[in-house]
Amino acid sequence: MKLPKFISSNIVLKITSLNAVVITIRLLVSAGVQRLLAVTVGEAGYASIGQVRNILAMLTSTTTLGTFNGVVKYVAEFKTNQPELSKVFSTVTTFTLIGSLVSAVVLFFGASHLSEYLFNSQAYIYIFQLLAVIAPFIAMSRVANAVVSGLSDYKKYAKIELISYLIATVALVIGLFTSELKGVIIAIAFAPVIQLIVLGFVFGKTLKTYVKFKSLGFQLFYKNKLLAFTLMSFISTFLLNYIELNIRTLVAEEININEAGYWTAITFISKNYMVFATGLFTLYVLPKFASIHSKYEFKNEVFNIYKTILPIFGLGMLLVYVLRDYIIQFIYPDFTGIEPLFKWQLLGDFIRLGALVLSHQFLAKRLVKSFVITEIASLALFFVLSKVFIQYYGTEGIVIAHFVRYILYFIMVCFVIKIYFSNQKNNSTDGKNM
Image: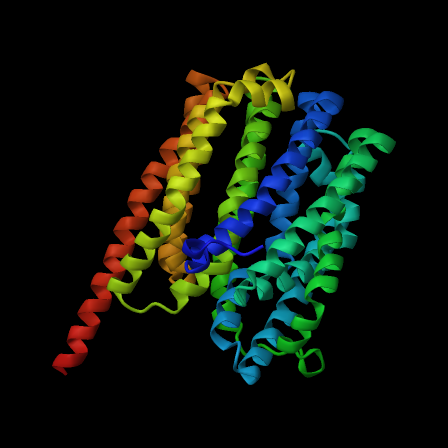
């Protein structure tokens, strides 16, 4: 199908429109599956599923030592420079071997402690031991995905996302009907393995063109540069999911496990529509910002992204809010406590989108200090505000904290980027005066 001219001439719209097709299919499939889960496993089971998803997200960082955004950046920069790419991938190979091994050992031998700490039960030891075995596959899938993103191959990215999601969904439904909650959790754990297999079929030939496997060695040419991304990933992925785990536990202890299920449900809805923007960030924003070197170019690009995606995103979120009662009735029929959470979650996510576009400048330019300061401040705000607001507003206090956090985060990011370009201008002026 030929795209309209106004879309085909705008790369942001091309990626967004293709992403929209994939995500629409995902949302329709997900709606049916989530209803099935909500009815079958209930609020408590849903909270447990949320814990497992957070653990899996943390593993995408630890198994690769957080090299995903580094691979995206350097593949985008060196896609025509094979010697440099070989150096990058040799370093990444070493990092992923170390990350996978350490993650597997911690998961396998710490299974009993982790099960008790995160679930207040020994019944989940099996999932940590299973994830220990799967850890290397999670790492390989993550790195291969980073190559797709670095090449901005949005068509293959969309195909991989859709096929792997549909197969993983079938596995989840089979798991649900054969072993209920345990089967669902095992299926979720196997999702990265499914994605790796799909990646091999769809992207295998292209991957071999850029990654010369025979020339890879356990070398650390890009150690210092990739360690910066390790630190940033640890904060943005590992710490974020760790805090979400603790907040879910906080809600369960301060109120009850059902309320933890409601919060898990609203965050899952949020993550489903935020996927709409995630592909754009990795396929377009990060590689594009990496190639921009002036304040004027940066402002123009940010304005172009904002005017393209914010109206689409805002309209979609407004639609979700208007239809919230129908969403609850159709997907989460017994989750009556979820309705008050929509407003604050949606408002927070809209501001979050605007802030995330800007903050990708930190990743593109490897501004480690700026990234670390803003992210830690953001996470600390979320955790502290959640603990305070839950006392006054119950579970709704968590999503109010989410909203307030991203207002302050957006202000911080704008301020830090302004300082960055001011320093660039001063350095340029000093150079001319020398």
